[in-house]
Image (cartoon, rainbow, N blue to C red; front, side, top):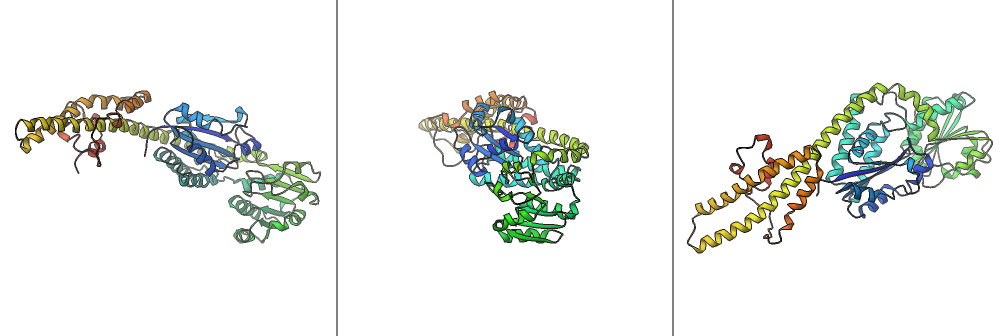
Length: 456
């Protein structure tokens, strides 16, 4: 496992891109995207997130150039202005903002946190998550949970489903209490839409889904008189409905123009990604078609009420980002330091073995004399590498990754071809009394590095 590298990210989201552009960047599912990215040269880890408002991907590579190259065809057909390219620090901050709801169309909405976790599980199953992304994503989840527990960022927040109901209430030319509503889809968004309709006291709610049993489950969850049906009767239900909210996960259109030709006066709100309702349906005189882009005006009103909470979350993210960057710096320095001591240990083992053989040829050695030779070698390593250890720590603190990467190459343990191969980790590199007493405690060799190469 490798715990160093650089994270690069790319995002196509609602703040810059249109729904068709987000769809274009989502033509492959998360599993496929991660698999494809892992096949690229230099990519050690990969993660992808897809929701109705965003399509994103992240990779871990040894340098930023390799990261950009791996992501260059992620949104190939999307105009450049709709694509956001993110470097290491931007990617980390963005993931925290996404998890906390600051990047959502509906500020502070809760669904994104579950979607982010689901994407982590999928990416992990493909083998895309290792130490670097695990730290970044777990920190993002932690921030998302803190934001909702410690601030009012999601107080009064609306889901896309309830935002759709608000839009319908504002645009329908009749009281919503007299409306017959149809919800297409029995997933999380469909359930939220059905509950929002029930809270608005619509006259009737029908839940339609490809699997009727799932629709029945949602109908039972709704605090209102709701019924369930399957998609085989969709055209009939469209004719009876005044308001349709569609939120399936189908990769193809669920509602086509021909399905609506006999529907009469109907308002349809498509909150699915990719879209459920064929865009050409808006050409029918009796149909009013709205999508996620149209929800902006509704959500703007709720955002203004949570601006203070958003500022508190921004400060939280600043602190958590600093902590994460510091942790990465320590890991990078420690990785280079570990490589340095491992390389020195291999050389020491070889040279001490040679020296002892020569001394044995001159006469028998006592155990105390052998220990003296071993201790001398350990002390030399400790004294010689103390200054480079401090320099690597300073380089990490100064974000001098060039020095650290150079050290990793210079002290690559595999470089010394003459080293003796060992089945077990080397022991005895740094007994505690071999560390220079001239160095302050906080500049000593890391304890875990010492223990890694010391006897149990």
